Image (tube, rainbow, N blue to C red):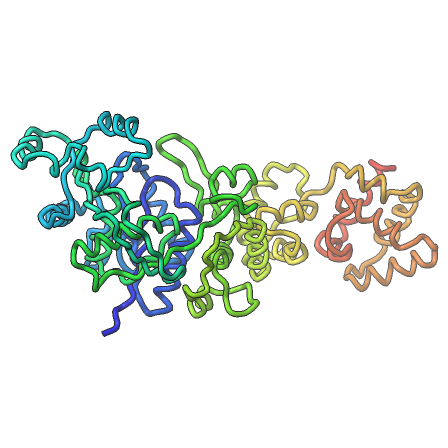
Length: 516
């Protein structure tokens, strides 16, 4: 009987969700949806010392914003979890883990170790490249070297201890990876990993994730390649529990690399180069730091999804723009790269530009209105009513020049605020000795003309320029400076259409007064 696909995303609430983690969640989601399976969200909070308040809520909000739907586990709609395999926070599963710690101890696959930090440090000093394993465990303070009665007495006295997995030496451990193929690791390089700490009565990641994946019936573990070195240990744990037949298939995703390809992408890279590495802005309640997010920077969730999907995965054709459903239909682990993917943040901006162009002018106007109203509130010279219709028309003329809604103000400000100063470079290049004369004559024509359509103005001004032999560029560049304050903006008749006759004439008069 074919096993139902069940995948999980299992972040730790230790801070903001890194964009690499988002990609891992996305690939899990695409795989699950393509196979008609379930996507689970589990919170791995066994490391209580690194817990950051608000991090869990941040994770669920980020996934919801991106459209990565959670079928089971922790989510915005069910903050305490939904499904039949809970609890979904590892900190709430202590009693479950105890059973399996005891099972490993009883089977001889694990042992209790009392070594203090000082004793461990002494060994590291004594033995170069010290590793707690088959070669050294007999020299340490553990249940393999102590009498049973002493072990029991130490525990009864409240002495802190850990439970270590007993790795048998010189065994070839086979890990079948769906991306990388067969990976073989000799157990001699593995140490006896700590599985449980009595100090906080919680398992470590290695035990908890194995037990949880088994009990939650996870069929595929899709995670970052930083976990590949741990995979042999996890395979050995499945064997120790007798769960080989239900062991999930593994797939280890390539790293997200710095933009130059040299090393793993970090927050420092984003700070240095000016791009976010987190999906949402994050306010760290522990240290008060604030990290920028894609949402607050003005990215659309569909742009972020599209961008991330193509980092380390490629489709069959040359298509670059995908809906979520198209990604689901095309996704395959066979087309995931083995090598790291450069984080080309400029490509992320390109994707956002493309998605912005697909938005209607009316939708963009609605998104832009808060920016516009804030700007106009502090601008005493604002003359043009910022009605939704006007804003939509203006955006339609300028949106192809921006990547983000927040950038629109720089492109459209002159429509709403009359220029009071004039760009020096534009004046030097475009405002000629005869420009005042040309603008005065043009003003007379405009004042007496009623047909304010683009065609009507074109039929008025162009024959006059030709008759006077002034040169179209000389006249129209000066006219643009009068209206805009600089040599920029869309077609001049589109500008006059929005401004209207009265405002157009007023701006020419103001320019003549200031520029002479």
